[in-house]
Length: 332
Image 1 (cartoon, rainbow, N blue to C red):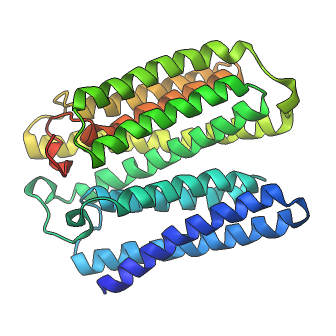
Image 2: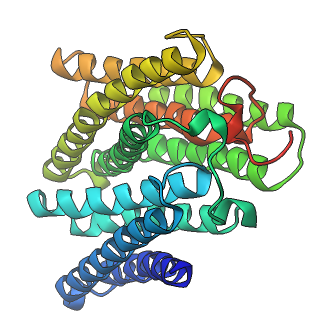
């Protein structure tokens, strides 16, 4: 059964790779644009179904809910990313946006495949995770993180179609630097203070420059219709992810009280989850009260993605300690 699970997971990863290139070809060959987009969507659907079966089979083999370590959470994250895009594409004309969704899913598959073998193996739960709260608390959080990252991709598209190319480049580089810090923290033994400085420094400087350079725009790339479309998608994804995050934080408090006798301990991961919640609460407030333009909201959404990255993956890879340190898979 484990062979089937591995084969299905690899099929899902391969589908992300193929669909990515199909979307890229759709950009380059206008005459076959529609055909390549349809093919890419069907391939991603196949990958989504394969990953769904892989998760179910892993759960059957483990005889528990299959969400207990970083590898399994990445499988769920990729599943949520692929499913979110497929759902959004039914309501919005965002076929070529699938290239970004495929790239994000592929990145997570690669990240998971390079984790230590111990993460891939099915092993007994650590005592801290032996609770019915695990399947109540963790899945909504993982799906919320995926929705926030999809909203960030939509925010990048919005910046492009609103002509804010400089801010787009700055925020893209910022995300890449932050992601590089997490990757280096996962697979290398570089000093944690260097990685923390890289993540925090790039996030603060990039966010500041991204907001500052919204004053300049290139009319050559402006497309008001598409800009408004991706602004709407950014908001819709946040409005799905935000209540899931809220539910995850509340159930996390209930689980903490059950396990440790306290609803809130100001543990680093708890604090970062609260920071993530506040960042998206600010986004929703600014959107509802129309206090800033769409491009400013896009940068705010991308700042939220940086905080989400720190909460989800940066916590264990950048050397933070606390009550959630059982999720770490190597010594810092």
